[in-house]
Length: 501
Ligand SMILES: Nc1ncnc2c1ncn2[C@@H]1O[C@H](COP(=O)(O)OP(=O)(O)O)[C@@H](O)[C@H]1O
Ligand SMILES: [Mg+2]
Image (cartoon, rainbow, N blue to C red; front, side):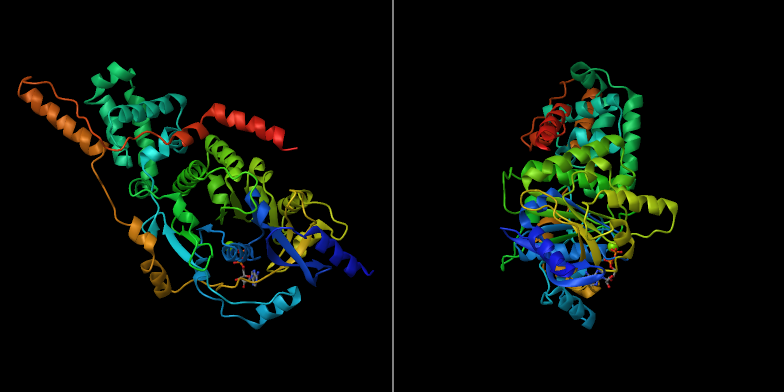
C-alpha cells in the first residue's frame, strides 16, 4: 500500500460512524487533499462542545457557517451570536464560484447552493426579534454576579428579591429594582427594618451605581417584558430543517457587560428549561459564539466560574456550545478542557509569543504519525483546518488536516432589503416586539408612597392598607436557584470528576 492509501484507510477507519453525522470536508496529506477521505463528525457527540480557532481571515466564520448549515439540514436548530454581522447571508443561496467547484471536486462531495431558514434576533435597538428577560427571572444570584457585588451587597439584593416576593411586587425591569432599593432605605425604611433587618445606605448606593453602569451599556433594553421563551430557539421549518437563529450583536462589541449578562441569562434559562437528555443520538440545539474572547475578556472571577459550571452542566441537556476565537488561549483552561470538537485554522508565527501559542496549541492535539502538528498549524491555507473530533464512543478521532467544504449559502451579508424581508415575515417578531410596561414594583411602590403621604396629611385617619395583588409571583426560577447554589455546583463537580475518567 502506498502511504496515501494507508492514510486514506486510517482516516476512513477513524471517521466511520454508526449513526448520523455531518461531513466537514476531506483530509489532506502533505498539503494535498485526499479525495473521498471524508472527515465526519457524529451527531451524537456534538453536544460535547467545541472550538473553532485561527488567525483573522483563515476561515473561522465560514467553518461556523458550514457546520450550522449542515446541522440545520439534519433538523438540528442553531443559535449564532454574530458579533461582526457577517452571517446573515445564510438566508440566501450561494451564487457559486469556479473555486468552490474546484474545492468540492478535490473533496469528492457535490456542491449544492441553497438557503436556510433564518430568524434574526436582537439584544438592542436593531431590528429583529427582541430578546428580553425580566429581573425576577434573572434572579438575585446572577444579578449579583453580573454587578460583581460583595457578599454584603449580594445579601441586600437577596433581601430585595425576598421583599418583592413577599409583597407580590413584580420586578420586571431595572427601574423596578432601583425603586425597591431606594424604598428600602427611604420611605420604606421602617417597614424593611422590622422584617428584614437594617440595610445600609452606603451599600444600596454602591449597588445603585453599578446598576446605572449596567444601564449605560444598554441593559435597560434587555431587562423587561415580553421575556423570551428559549423553546422558540428550537423551531423546525416545514421541510424538517432546523432554524438558524442569528443574534446580531454588531453594536455590542463595546458593551461586554451587556453581552455577558445576556449570555449568562440565556444559558441559565436554557439549562432550566430543557429536559435531561440521557444518552441521545443527536443534540437539541447548538450555540456558536463568534469572537468569543469578548465574553471572557472582562468577566469577573465569579462570572467565569458561573460560565464554567454552566458549560459543564448544559451538555446533559443536549446543548453544544461552540466558541469561535483567534487563539485557543482566549478561552479559559477549564472550559478548553471540556471541548470535544476542535477545528484549528492556521496560526501565524510572527512573534515569540505567537510561537509559544503554537507550541501550546500543538500539544493539545492528538499525536499523528502523518503530521508535524506545529508545522501544519502555520502552513494551512484559507478554508483548511486541523480537526480532531470525538467518535461515538467519546474517543478522539485521528488528527486530520482538512480541506473544508464551502458554505451552501451566501458567504456575504444580506442587503438591507433582504434583511427587512426576513424580519417582516417573521412570526417571532410579531410575538415579541411589543414593549409592555405593565404595573410592576415601580408603579406599585410609587402608589404606596403617595397613599402614605396622603394619609399622613389627613393626620392618621386610617393607616395605609397593605396592597394585595394577584399578579404573577416574582419568585426566582427554582431551577436557576438550585443551579446557581454553591452546594449544588460543588456536588455536580464532584460527580463530574468521577465520571470523567
Ligand atoms: N470553507 C470555505 N470555503 C470557501 N471559501 C472559504 C472557506 N473558508 C474561508 N473562505 C474564504 O476566506 C474568507 C475569510 O473567511 P472568514 O471565515 O471570514 O475568516 P475569519 O472568520 O477567520 O476571519 C472568506 O470570505 C472566503 O472567501
Ligand atoms: Mg470571522
